[in-house]
Image (tube, rainbow, N blue to C red):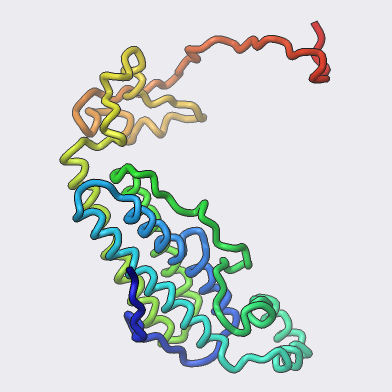
Amino acid sequence: MFRHQKELQFEVKVERPDALLARQVQELLGGQFGEMSVMMQYLFQGFNCRGEEKYKDMLMDIGTEEIGHVEMLCNLISQLLDGISPAEQIEAAKDPMIAAILGGTNPQHLIVSGLGATPRDSNGVPWNSGYIVASGNLLADFRSNLHAESQGRLQVSRVYEMTTDESVRAVFRKMLARDRYHQYQWMAAISELEEKHGIVAPASFPPEAELEAQPHAYEFWNLSEGTQSSDGRWAKGAAQDGSGEFVYLEDPKALGQIPNPNLPHFSTHNDINE
């Protein structure tokens, strides 16, 4: 059960209307790594979580917080669009320089949503569920969550640099601080699961089950010009779980056969003849 509280998690206000910034904030709301994505990702992972209650409870806590972040961004976009009318934009656009600036705004804010936020990215592409990961494997999912928070915080920091509105920046600083904590959170949860089950997901499929393929689990294949990649930790030393030693193959050879598939039936009209 969810219960809505009227107060926002943090204060949201702007110094002045800014339609272009409102469009940019749409990316933080409905983009691939926006708040709608992490909200849905954490909630679906929580809804589907089976096992220790603390993981489900954590997912539901943070997923619910992200609902509040979606509301904050919707409120921010609405404030940035306050006082902007179609007539004023048409009049302002008579100046060629202003017209060029207005070309960067989002017409859907006027035409579709009536000066409100939309579940879309900064180019008007609708948010879609293909952005989220909820696999049922906690380690795999938590690593995806760390990735999502990293990309999301990166994008907030970039939009932060695009405005001088100190009130908007204050909102972003709150979001950046929470995204910092969420990265800590997922790193802690990942570390706990790795200590329990090992660092490779899924742990339920152990290296021993790979049989004859086992040696290839430690090989780095140099498949581009140059050998600079040999200097990395991934190319030498013991594997992180101690199960083997990395090997750098400077000139790897193909180990498979040349494919020779059967000719298709003539009725497929593939223009291949015997």
